[in-house]
Length: 169
Image (cartoon, rainbow, N blue to C red):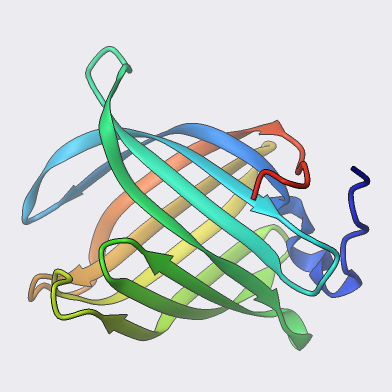
């Protein structure tokens, strides 16, 4: 299958396209600190958006997978003047819309809208930073949840392990 040409509007975020894997750390006042593994895939179909899927799993002290953690999927849309919109959905009953901007290989996003189902845990907002540093994708996520103000939650360093292949998303 031929890979479609990346839409020209996506040039500012083209560095994201591909499959990334790595590990990170997490914590929050309401939970114990933990280590996790992660895979992120940014894909495209030639239209002016990127597809996005993230899977995480708990790691033990030796770095072995223990159990699945979070999953999120969505779409990243590049707007004029380096603005960005991101729509994310979680199987836990949360949907988020982020807005932000791209400056070179740095992306900063803040939640504009958070919607929750009646059974979802309380979550009111997030702030995400992504950056390409020495060829690796570094990111950090701060959140406001469980009656607490926005604060650090998780961060990771991911290495590119593959280019985008149509059909994997």
